[in-house]
Length: 436
Image 1 (cartoon, rainbow, N blue to C red):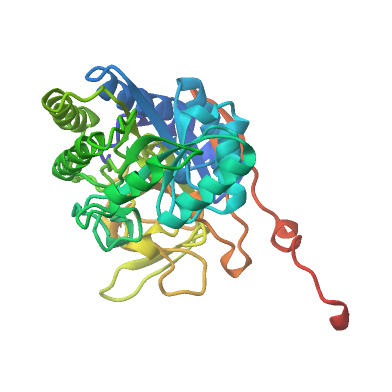
Image 2: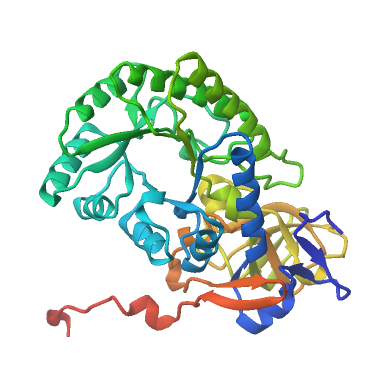
């Protein structure tokens, strides 16, 4: 049997067990394709991340990044653990409010926030990480009209290179995000913001990218950010919040290294402590925005094998009922997700295969050149580490309904997102009168 991550196991029937539940029974009960999330793993990941920093710094706010998985049940679990929220849209903000996370424990990020979204954030006292001068002016105008002072930080671009996919590297100087540090743009923005009547400047923010498995870029970003905090103090602006974003990756491949949050915390906090002491700064609250680290390995996708197709001297094609419509990361990023057969988890992986979805696209695959047990129609494929950027990035390509999602907790299982049906695919469509 393959070495599974610690929160998985196999039962006497040779089936995968997640959160105390038999994956084969879950598929039979709820149908496929099916997302399954382990509640206890979500809680464990959050607590480990929080403790890593809280044990080293007196004031820490961990804001779960809803973009990874904004399902209400997931958000409620993390609200119960004490998490804040990192939101990047008005609807994510509403989700966080809806599960009981107060606005003063949220940060609002993104390079385009609409006026209604900004108004919602200002009204609820959310810390808005401003991305441009025009956005800053818009916030000042809205806050004036509402008779409020908007809490803001500035998102700055520290120009830190990260070893990750270019689509999710966000801290390079040519990225669309943030105020440029090198040219002095960020300092000028702080000067302008500090003169605004309806703006309270409280923070600084950077986010260098996602799925990073090397501590070096985090340390470099912390050094650049704290140097800027010291410069901002010369303007008589004492920042209360230093937001270092998220980005800690997970091992998707069996041989990927693990970047431990304790290691990242040790390096970041050492930098912060040194600069605070050397520059006589007020001790800020450190803010972090993990998403992937908290939920990615808590989730799997179950997909039913429909057909197999052998080709001479080539991998066997296995067609399953979930493709890039359900999980786009392999097609979009070339991302690796480990795959096994959940009903044959103890059997040897001896057959070289490509695992494909049902869509009319050559790019519709979940994995290529993988080793699995000999697969037959009716087998159950399990795709690992899909709790982040899985269902939230799904589509209705070729009129495929989006999968259901189930939460498991010590053997209990309950639907937390219903499976779409045909009516869901067409209920927003309208035929113009002249076509009737």
